[in-house]
Image (cartoon, rainbow, N blue to C red):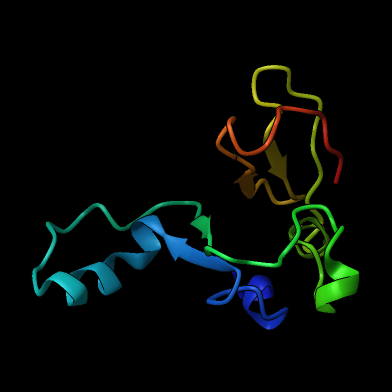
Length: 113
């Protein structure tokens, strides 16, 4: 998540959602969520509407920013040969990033980091 922020993708092209955004959700609805749900080993993101960011680099020339895959490769992520989870990238310490997209928006195809 830190690398995405350094590259200028968070807040403009990608938004943190899920458990990492619980504090923001609590502030927005003026409520407290039950404790115990906020500890996870991953983070979730959503594309911001109107983003010019690219998943694989096609818009990097136009925007002057790195693609999502280029930023994710920096910490040493690779796509292992996992037929059951072809969407999951893993780094050398075992940290997992799942690359998911709505099927209607992005056709399913093989991509390599």
